[in-house]
Length: 81
Image 1 (cartoon, rainbow, N blue to C red):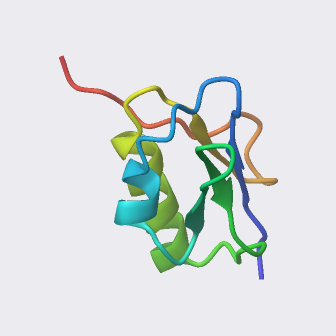
Image 2 (image 1 turned 180 degrees about the horizontal axis):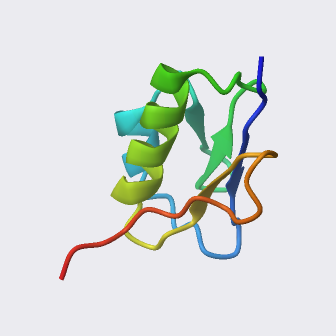
Image 3 (image 1 turned 180 degrees about the vertical axis):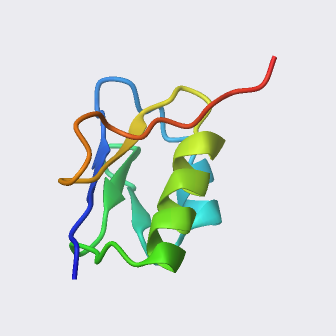
């Protein structure tokens, strides 16, 4: 199974926890540092990938990145304007 990489930029994360609310099986909030953390490594299944991308899109400071080793560039959520 394809492994994707989900990261949280701790310099950007401000602890809004929108990723935790959106995908609690993928993220948790480190109460001590008030930042989001990624839980166990995840498989790249369609449901997991969709949740990860939705969580990334929900982050108001764009601290969450979802990468796929088969894709050259990280998948960043698009914001409509």
